[in-house]
Length: 124
Length: 107
Image (cartoon, rainbow over all chains, first blue to last red; front, side):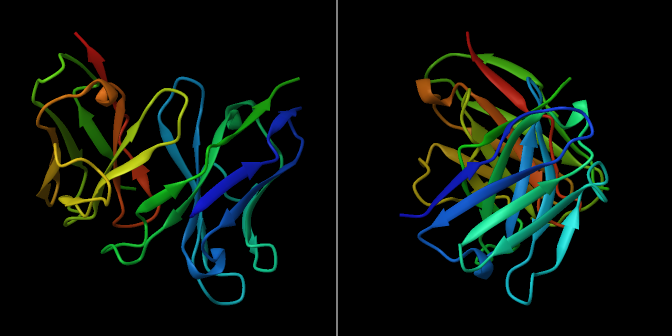
């Protein structure tokens, strides 16, 4: 069964760091486009970052709101996706979802499988 | 950045009704448009990709159409589980962007 399970969320003070994990089963993370999407309380979906399949590490892109503070990566040996979040701000408070893209669609940026989400709260 | 605008922002309807949600892109995105349904407290779920392709396992009451800048999601006969929030998303280029959402409520 194809599944994504996020972990690593929690309460963190402004300026702090947190690393989210997204453990995959039923498929290989490094062979797929993978993304992080977040949702602030009561708000809509906001794309955060994407990592492309293949290569050593893969091409990455970020939303302007997180570029320079967040880093997406993966560990093939653990079949896990990560989001390292530094210099956290109150506006980063959200549920963070990881998702898998499917390049059999016309675009690889189609998110077919989602995790259940992990909650990050940035507050003093 | 490509801006995605959905209308309406909210909608009241009854079980069995036919409803249509619209999504407009700020520039042409060909057919790189996807629709998701999100139930309260749950992750989004892909319904339609490439503007009109039904995702495997999604009921046939869902359909999508459009190309260029204007797109629609139609639910032919609302079921209780369809009362949720719907999002469009462009998959044409980064930054990937979502519409603001359409909340579908029971009348």
